[in-house]
Image (cartoon, rainbow, N blue to C red):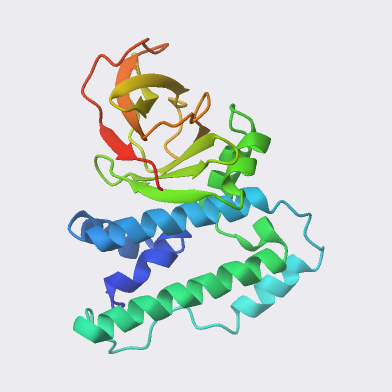
Length: 250
C-alpha cells in the first residue's frame, strides 16, 4: 500500500530508491503531473552531474559505515499517513523534500561521491555514463561547469530527459532515463536548432535506455535541440517529425 504523498517521491525516484509498487504508482502519477515530471528530470540530472563530477576512491570503512547506519534509519513512512495532501501542506512538503534531498546530495559528495549510491540501478546508470563513447571527461566538464544550466526535455512515454548547456564550454549534454529503444534498423539522432535550421549533433547509443550524450559540435549560438528517429547511421537532415524540440536554457 502506498502511504506517502506521491508529490514527495520525486527525489526517491531520481535516486532509484522506490519499491516496484511505489515506482509504478509514481510513474502513473507523472503522466498527469507536469510539476513532478519537471522536478524529477531536474533531480535526475543533478544526480548524474554529481556522479560524474565527483569520482573519488572511497575509504575502505565507508561500506561498513553505510550499512551500519541503514539499520538505524526507518525506511517506511508511519502508518496512517494520508495518501495525498493538498494546497499549502503539499507545497510545504515538496519544499521540505527538496531541501532534504539537497542536504543528502551534499553529504553524499562530502562522504565519497559515487560510493554512497548503493542501489544497483543507480550504480549501473553511473557506470554507463562513465563509459559513454563521447568521452567521460568532456561530459563531466560540461556537467560540472560553473555556468552549466539545465532544462527538462519533454519526451514520449515515461522517459525523463534533461539538457545541460555550458556556454563557457560551448557544449551541451543530453541526459536521459527510461528512453524506449528506437525501432529496428533505426536510431535516435540529436540536432542543434539553429533558428529553425537543424544541424546534426550526433547519434544516441541504440542499446541504452539511460545515457548521457555529449552533443557533437559546438553550441555556437544554437537556440535549442531536437531528436528524430532516423535510419541506422543517421541522416544529413531530419527525415521525420521531431520527437521533441526544446529551447536551450538561458
